[in-house]
Image (tube, rainbow, N blue to C red; front, side):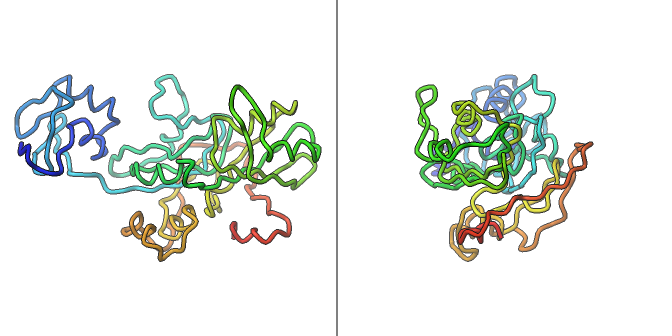
Length: 288
């Protein structure tokens, strides 16, 4: 190993970056003697390696880095977004089957009882761009509540509600039916909408994420997914398609979407999925 190489990184990170496994799992593989570097078994996860080093895991060669993958999934209810929970019977990641093994993770979360649009990727920089509060990537949700909210209660959601030491608030809230509402979040704290609803003495009957940034779920049915396009990347980042940042993330992506792929999920209700339209507001074009 050439320790003078400017691109040195520890072995655990190298395996994770290449999509072999999570960092925790990669460290286990190394400690168990399953990893060789330049033909020699390496058991120290902190060992520094360079791009020129030849690494094998359980006899299989490790590429320098994995191809970047960006996937949009319509998560059904009852599935969790974590990859690591050994007790979870239904994981959203299991709905995505790729020909080439890639370590994917979700960019943000949807709780088990919520449904809708979620992004899976192996690009940590892209995931951070979507989820860090400083970037203000808005998420839009359709809420069905047990009872209608009063105008004062809707205003409280925007002004902020104190719960368990945190201030929960929505960027926008508007009504679409007697007990149906659209809610826009900028940050998305843990179970933020459900907690606001409970704090107001109401109950969430159904919660669905309809859009991230300007990217809508579109025609994806529950359990279906597809690879994102360059246009999708632009919409989710709320940028022009020719913006240099879009190019950074989407240089090798399609310009037109592939057909959606259905995961191993069966919606017995066969209900139609239609996104409520925001009534006669100028910003409606975000969802076109």
